[in-house]
Picture 1 (spheres, rainbow, N blue to C red):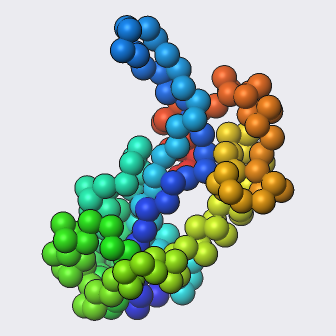
Picture 2 (cartoon, rainbow, N blue to C red):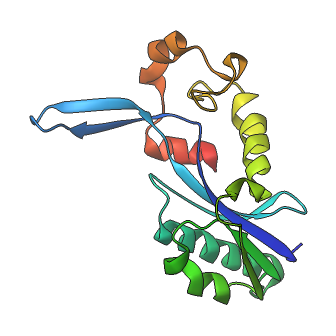
Length: 176
């Protein structure tokens, strides 16, 4: 613990409904919306040290997740601790380099073009299966459109129950 952390954003496979106004001024509800969770993971224990959730991954969301992780160490230990090593992908690295460097002793970005080398990627797959897919959450959207059929929910069923999907706040509560 605290030796190595890895950080990444993940498009959570839970759908939520969102109501807004279209270009013509009509009220429209969409049901295909997904949130992004940036997680700070201690892969040694599969412990989520910190996180932040929003509609899209952004440098600000990553900063919030790192701040949440560092604050969490203070909650646990009574003082703030930084990990020895931090690994990230290369998303907005130029904007985030200073905060990455300040958050750890050794900063290690994943090799360009090889983001899948990060240990957090298999964690997301495990986390999704354990917490959303296996629990048969009604708004689980499946992995992605190119994955195997048995990894996908029934689209007719999703359409039939979409009015029961949570709103954004309800979806955040599910993720938390």
